[in-house]
Image (cartoon, rainbow, N blue to C red; front, side):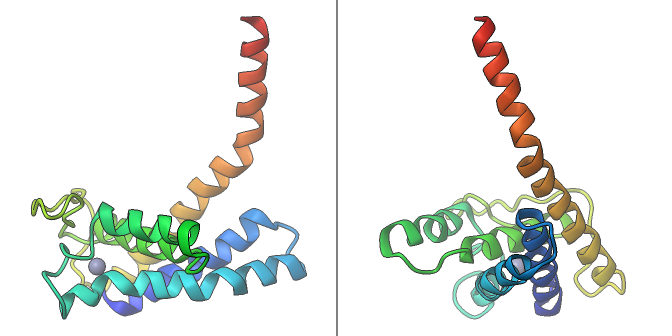
Length: 160
Ligand SMILES: [Zn+2]
């Protein structure tokens, strides 16, 4: 996807996450959206820096780079939530566009799904919106189904 698509995806995802974690639509909801949207948008823009430095869809489109951004806040106490933007960039490239990404770079094979549209397609915007909604739905499912899963685990654990 192009920069426009990645920013749109990051903004929609941030709004969705705000409502997933604070569904009331009140001040905590909007505070959460504000808190995560800027780092998520920055993270979503970062991987395509490899169009200028390195090999595009390889050098900064891989799991080691994602792991770096995920671990960074643990060690240095900054760059929180940037990894979410990097992760959603990968999802959009893998699911939404025809070309894949080199997940295990420096192993250069690119992995993609047999779906998606060309980056230049008129439908790229629609595909981006649909993928963003699916991402929020999956995260909401994980977050809100977590409690029954824990209950089930405790119940099963109690029986054993
Ligand atoms: Zn990309």
